[in-house]
Image 1 (cartoon, rainbow, N blue to C red):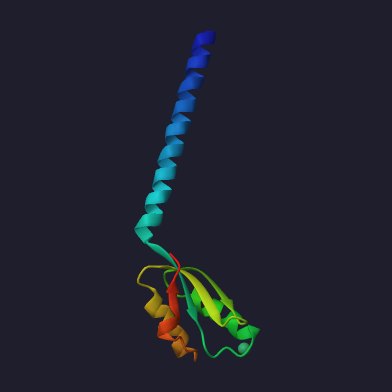
Image 2 (tube, rainbow, N blue to C red; image 1 turned 30 degrees about the vertical axis):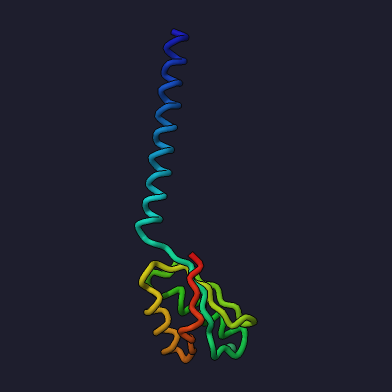
Length: 109
Ligand SMILES: [Cu+2]
């Protein structure tokens, strides 16, 4: 009786470990499948902090964007984005009246 109880506890633990491994592997695969990138670029035309906030809002609404932070002080935007989606973001910002110099786009990873 006691042995049985310990045995089933053992099975539960093994099951939990396997489940944990499976979930872990799934997460890693998803991250690789979306090909997630962090890109930093210069933004010209910001006049104040509100412009930086407006850019964050505009960029966050673009498809494939997971996150965006804009610094008015540095005149820079940092975007977490799916590969191949940056062109759309840049076009959207240019339509909004900002300039993105092509030579100042840096891929962080
Ligand atoms: Cu402004």
